[in-house]
Amino acid sequence: MSDSTTASGSADWDFTTVAHLWDYRTGAIMAGTGKLDALSDADRQGSLTALIDRVLALIRGMDDGWLVGTSFFMVDDVYKSLFRDFVWSPGAYAYLGATAGVVVQELGRRGMVLHYVVDATEGEADLEAMLTYLPPAFQAAGLIPIGPQIVALALLRRSEEPPYTDITAIRRHRDEGHQIADTLIARVHQERRSSVYLNLDLDDGSPPLDLDVALSQRGAPGTIVVFRSEAPVEGSLAECTPPPGVALPKGP
Image (cartoon, rainbow, N blue to C red; front, side, top):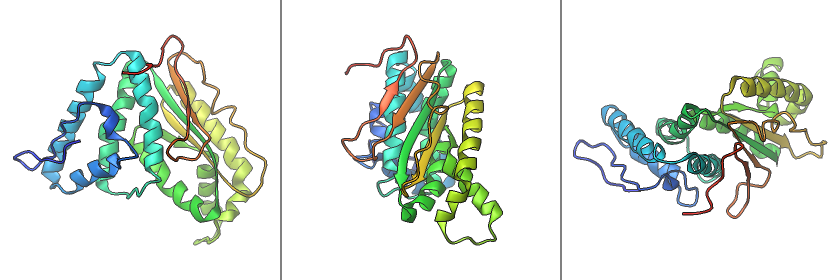
């Protein structure tokens, strides 16, 4: 991705493939964010318009297979990028919306939805930060964030006298959070909206929560389900179930 700017000061988005937009290995999201954050408000808006137009020009020319494949690496690279020196800023929200959000919108235009399901266990030192910054990042990318621990944390914050100091108290709301999260994700499935289901459980030896509802749309018409149970590190794998009748591309 070019780091140049136009004469007006707006960032120049001259990439030739959307593959570079979210590459966690190169810090692409933070690089794009930095370009936007360096601009004035007026130049930032013009730059975002140019970025959206460039993304649309590339993905509108894709067949369904390539678009599904793009959405697969997009959502998984966004997740992995959030663990690589990610810093939240207005530019980050805008960049994710203008790139990943545009892909999700194009899926919807073609009658498809994307469901990203993450199953992970986390130490208490990391859990609260993850539950705080992961949902808005995916929301910026056009995905509705839902998860047992997201709900449980909201229940904890409502029921405890502020400020609560021990994230492990989330255990008290674990089962209720799971039940509510499954009800919410079932509604999202019914409404045909794209989502991310984050099961970020405390690493305390508790029996795993089932993901039957979250993964229930595998094989549903017009539905992409991406499932990640491995840590978000280089070389790790995620599984993609494309919509029936849509084949993932085998390569360039």
